[in-house]
Amino acid sequence: MKSRILLSALLAAALSGLTTEACDLTIRVACPNDRTAGGTQVCVDGVGCALTDDLGIANIHLPTNGDFNVCVTTGSLPTGSTLATNCQKVTCTGDPLLVNFVLRGDFCGTPPPQGDCWLTGGGTVGKTKGPPHFSYGGVVYPGCSPKAADGGNWNVIDHLSGLHFQGRHIVVDSCSGVSTKSPPVNVNVIDFHGDGSIGGIGGNPDATVPVTFVGRAIDNLEPGGGNDQLFIQVMSGATVLLQIGNSAADPATISTGNLQIHTSSCSQ
Image (cartoon, rainbow, N blue to C red; front, side, top):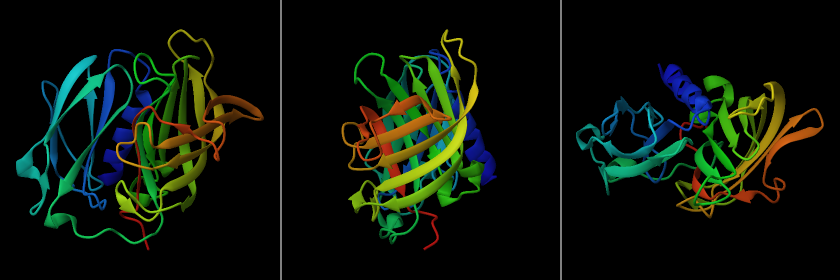
């Protein structure tokens, strides 16, 4: 069931950006120390409800552009946990959306020790108002497993060029860096690579072709916009077809959204 839920969420994210009339919303309910709350009900007013999986993740499709109210049903929270706020407002403009609800209380316990890591993220790069240059979103090694959804699914929409990149068959190369409180972990850098496809959207007639890619995400602070950093380079042979940031050593700072590195579910 866990793999099916994850795959459904990832496939939904893969379709985001192909239309300006809908958004795919990913919701995660977790403690500051990254302990997650499976079976928590999250609802979008006028759209519907879903239950988080054991990674604390739920996905809800928003059918139209506009503002939506996203709420956690407090009666479904784990015993010993609370939320500072159980509702957040999101605005759908056709890009992937990520909302985090942070749990507090005795349920959360203490931070996990250093170990392997995995990544969730969603947001934009380039401009905080008006159409962004890039939209990104997805999961790398969901639940710290290289087998779940074949290592994950990472999507980038290049709005200026009219390109949609979908990364699959992802391999995490390393987890490194320093301790952060977003959530509390002892690593804040994840390096990964894989293959996938890229093709034209929104009037761009470019055919979909196979590609390889490398990526680095740096989880610096909360909130992520203006703080977290991302590098993605997509290549067909020796030709670069899409790139965010100058290099892994000089990644781009994200404009909106978040990049979160987790160590929950990782073997120590």
